[in-house]
Figure 1: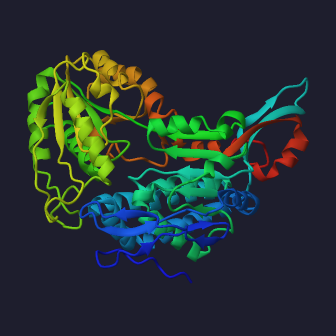
Figure 2: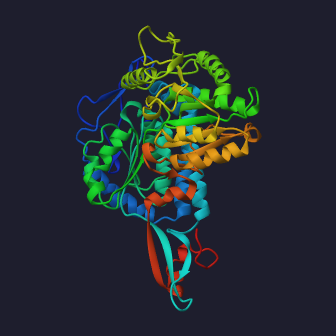
Figure 3: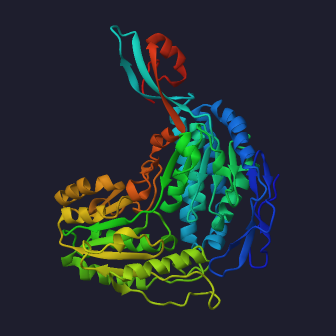
Length: 539
């Protein structure tokens, strides 16, 4: 039985994170990198990967974990994923406390991350049960290709024979790990998970729980606590790489030799200037109006605006602009910033000092082209003077959103957004959304169906997901920034061009599509594990 990782406190700053590779926990050599509490700047832990043999780690995953997973059916893999979901839920409070300490999360923000992790795993466990006792999937139905009905073709999806390397961002250490791992494990590929080092405490504890539970076959899950070193130099043609982070880093990854020469598959989720559009038909005080205001404030401040799906650009019709600005100024001005461990605090710090510096630099860029609506200095609650990486909400506005560039080109990864005032026409609003160069999600708040239809047609090519907020669903709508396991997550252009989740769609990244054609009876016999009711049908 593994000793549980102690929850770091100011009096216990000596926690050392361990990687889990080649079937054992290992601690890197050297002083390592410190992990901080971003509210107090106190050291919580250290971690290092110096001396770890990453080539051997990948080989172990391929040679041991891969065969073990592929020997299982989708239903059996789904039960493993279900067990991991329950494990996270049973240790929910412990993981939440780690997220508060290491991530600068309020309890609500930490719950959003941890509960999102267990919910996504549970969703893919259900999908595994639906796919049943097969080890490959059928992609579409059989296609006659000969003179008789005997000669047919069939596309199949089978697990690739490599390893899935996951590089996750700092803002969702639980959800980021789980959403990628759920899909890969269900598809039958072993996982090597590498979280952002600065906020890795939650992911490290999850790994300890996973391994202690013995739910996973040997080699099915590995964990890198710290720098990835030369890990990516050892990727091979059957491997896949899924990355969440900056577009600059993504460009570097796309130039890896394995990606360029060996066709290692890569999925990227990168920068995203997400938008919220308010329709001219919406009346202040209506359910649609209230939903719009609540969503904008939530998406700007949840996780201190450190969400890839946060709203960065807000487009409002000229007739409603002053009312919108006043409502947002009032709501954002009431946000209490400070130590997220305190119940009265609504928003914690940014995760790192470098994030704070980047956010302040980005605000300066936006202010060069927009007017300030709200940007006030606030002493954080419950924090030693001068400590912590705090940034209060910032709201800007421009009456010329078609003439400026910064709001459409520069993502400020914090509690910052710019209001752009437009003339109320859907075509103009769609053009403004498109200027962001591609986003993970765009939102439309309106009840006028003609306006909604025109906006959807104009924004869909530039958006991975569209949220349509209206009066009839206001009481049950999920926030636009919530990533749902049943819908695809990703976006075109600036957002990385990738696609994750989406229920069964997410599995295709980890499966090889192959066309098989021959005698129908032989095909049905060969593919019997994927048959439904004895005939070849899509799963």
